[in-house]
Image 1 (tube, rainbow over the protein chains, first blue to last red):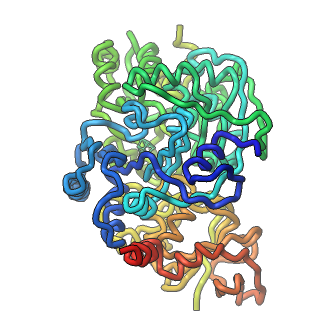
Image 2 (image 1 turned 135 degrees about the vertical axis):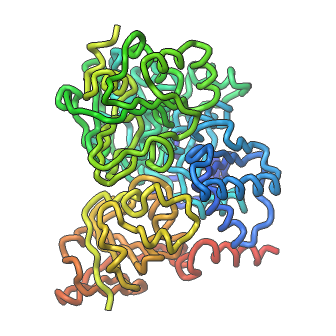
Image 3 (image 1 turned 180 degrees about the horizontal axis):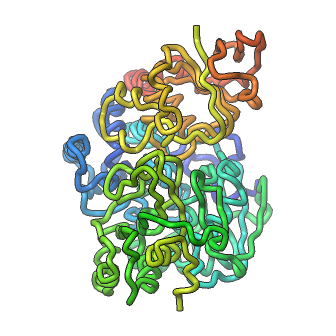
Length: 420
Length: 163
Ligand code: SF4
């Protein structure tokens, strides 16, 4: 029977020759991750289950990113609880607060590899699909079940095929394309489904750009996003010490429940307007809306390429006096590279605040909380009501280039005017 | 008597429990802030046993398991929606909160209608309107988890059985 990438990976992980959409399988998990806001409940559940040892301390990744350094006594207590658990269980890959946003850290350290099953206690674990693996998010109790048994049940998803052709013209980037796709599908247009990305636009992208695409699959309800592995994937992994990879491809006559095609060459910069991720418009339609906070960072757009394009726009310019621009490199590696390449100086010179690696202002519980009546433009992935603070605030989502340009002008701005 | 709390499409987990409350490790506290971003009255007026009736894509967004925990702590006994986001669906089952999928259900209820749910029979009743609706029965292995009171007790039994 012909199978898709997702079906092949789930078949192998559950010890079957083949699977079909709708089958319930128990899959072996290769890597399991939890962070400071999901690990405490997972540890609670793990103990309540009566489990004593995690199934494989080398396959568990624990780190702090949402509220690090601790932003409250509660956060500090969560951190302490996780530290103790990591020590007690001999967790090999426990990074404490010295790594960054989970979804940028795992790929950087070579955990996301073709053919693997990588599960995180966080919805944006779909990011890893850019590396040709099956990756999805679960809650804390499911994570506890993985900690205890190394396995979890999944329903094999139907697959949707999304193809894109034509090349993006900078400063239009992969974020604009995925926002456009989400606007087209709607925020539940891919619920329970695997979304496979194919075509020259994606194969021409760097891994940083591909991760941005897969990261946002959950915003259209997708269970996982997945891409093919090619020389770009291979090179990224080789640089991170992964010696051999075995790419998984969809059979030519594999079944898709839906196929959509996009032309990337004519795309305007896109903006998702309050309060839903599928409320997507061309930047042309929302230009001029005044903003109070601008934020560049997160698992969506806090990688080196994202900071580079923002720096290109901010170099020699000043952030508007009415705006606070917050820049948070996603990881320590990104932070160090941005430092070495002089990007952080460009940000500081432009009047931005540069914060330590982590989730930053993404979810309204750490730095950069947005107040009532305020407007935020953000390179993150969610703009639900109250996501970044007050329920009376508004969040617009855009690419790092659009956020940087808007920070300079104090209002939503087409970055093409400042790029080049 | 259980009341229905009716909401629209795409109620997100940020709506159910906002990020600012996640660090505090206390279900009662989460219950007190349930639905706060979209319905500040909810936690003050909800009574034990009440049911949420919603449109499409209930529980979209973050994987926070605090969402079904908050609803349970607030007194909610089940959620009936036209469709669910997948992580919320799993989390609710794992927490022992029944989640029933019933296309077209939202327009059949008004806020405050009296509601009754027969989980085994797969029926939702609007007692105020005198109507009843069939829901697709939950798969046996999900019923097993719910009957155990959630995944923790379910796995506990399994793990003990192995020893
Ligand atoms: S950066 Fe934002 S979306 Fe990504 S893991 Fe952190 S809080 Fe979640």
